[in-house]
Every structure is written in C-alpha cells, then in structure tokens.
Image (cartoon, rainbow, N blue to C red; front, side, top):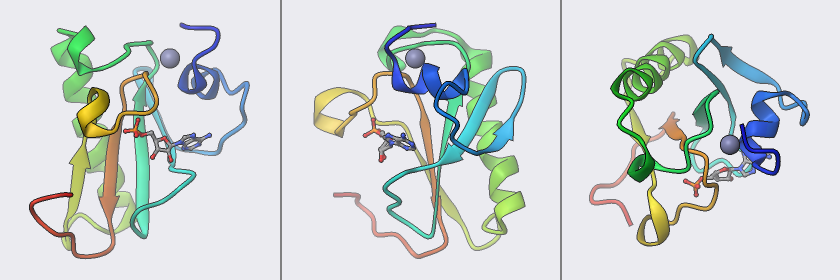
Length: 113
Ligand code: AMP
Ligand code: ZN
C-alpha cells in the first residue's frame, strides 16, 4: 500500500467512493470522468504502479474476470464492452496504480485514438 496513492486511498476507503464490486483481490468503482455510459475502473487491492511492474498473472486474470462479472451485472455483456489498461505516457496513464477500464453502453470506434 502506498500512503499517497489515490487508488490505494480508495481501496482503504479513506476516500469514500462507492464500490460497485469488491472481492478479496480487487475493487471497482465508477470513473469520475466517464467516457462511456458505463465506465468503471477495476483496481487490485495491492499497489502495483503499472503493467510494467508486475508478473502477477493471477492478479491480472482476476481483474479481467471481475470486469466480465461487472459487465454482466451492468447489462452490457451482450451488447459489448471494452477493457483497457493504459501504461505510461503514450497510453495516457495518469494514475500509477494499475487499473482496468471497463467501458460500455455505446458503440466504440477502432482503432482507438
Ligand atoms: P488512466 O488515465 O488510465 O491512468 O486512468 C485514470 C482514471 O482515473 C481516469 O479515467 C480518471 O478519470 C479516473 N479518476 C481519477 N480520480 C478519480 C476518482 N477520485 N474517482 C474515480 N475515478 C477517478
Ligand atoms: Zn496504490
């Protein structure tokens, strides 16, 4: 846990963001600046700065499985959704606690911007 990390503080609920999902391994909450009708961040409880800093395959798998479970609960599993992990500058990562974006509820373009 990093004392000054925003997402660690949300995991600890020092910042009382409502959770849409909680397990022993990860939590999920709605993005404060949503880019789609459903935009949820899935975050491991453990502090890992980015995909470059982990080899924890079970943790990474659990993020994806949590996203698919949340997508079903949000009613976007059949219509479709996108999961994204931004890593470092060129991807626009702004919070250096790894997180998976779950986006859905509208059609999305490909390739992404
Ligand atoms: P990234 O750019 O991939 O690092 O994504 C960070 C995301 O965190 C952005 O989409 C932000 O809108 C979101 N975000 C930042 N602060 C908060 C917060 N307090 N609660 C919810 N989402 C946040
Ligand atoms: Zn953190």
